[in-house]
Image (cartoon, rainbow, N blue to C red):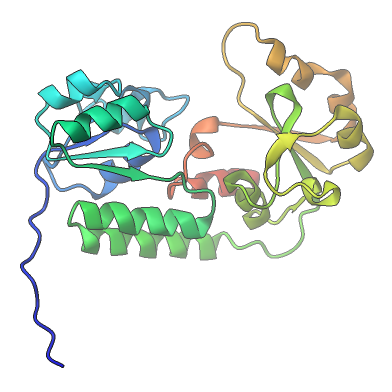
Length: 252
């Protein structure tokens, strides 16, 4: 059988990203002038690893009206984007691609390939993948760093099937969530955390103001159970992008 090549698909010229995580990968991969808007969160240095770069792009707030007026030929949204916004843009004839969050290193690779294909920037995606894999290899731990616990507001923790769990494992730590059969993100009673006696406690960055959900992180028991507590900047952890390499390095 002789395969007949179909017509090549033209690269989109006016791309809008309305998701913090796709914003960052699109900024890295897009050709000059191809990406015309990113979400407002992309400029927030607490959440975005590319806050400085995002200042070069007009922002959007994920509203259908403002995105339609940008005249995009492709909109990239996250899985948890506003359903009415996505539906309205599609009714108006605008192509919208919805991507799931990347919750593992393999998912990060898939996200890079997917966005590279959407932008018709496969070579740039391949280069970024190669740098990501090389960075992971360079950060491979030489040995076991001990047991660690992830602990967030409202007493939540993350297990092995989460991005945070993958970062912890890549840094050489054993996640105490495994001891309790926790694979995803769920609440972990403070008593169980204390009984686990982790060597290291890793919490999320604090936000301005007073929050009852964060009050548990001030409990005096947390100061006694782990001699080394690291408060990790959320921006390197929150999205499945190659910037997770910085989170791994910070733990090491």
